[in-house]
Length: 108
Image 1 (cartoon, helix red, strand yellow):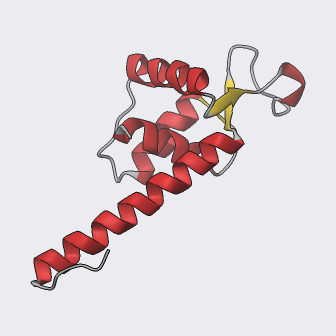
Image 2 (cartoon, one colour; image 1 turned 135 degrees about the horizontal axis):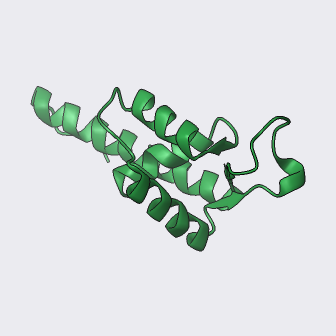
């Protein structure tokens, strides 16, 4: 999974967000290493919408006080499953890497 997709999905795991909130959350979650510039952010959002991993909130679901220009997104069930699978994969890779670095063969 692309790292920008991972952080975008991770941002939405806490609840619906609009574009600039997703950008801010991704930067915070990655300790500043992931910066979702507008072209990357909105291109990624379109791809994740196409894959069915996220969906846009309908007008009636938007938070009270949200401006009419903001588009809000949330994870779908498939998106949450995909994020959970990626987290499991990363945990497995991390275990193997730490074992390798410590000189112990990692268990599968």
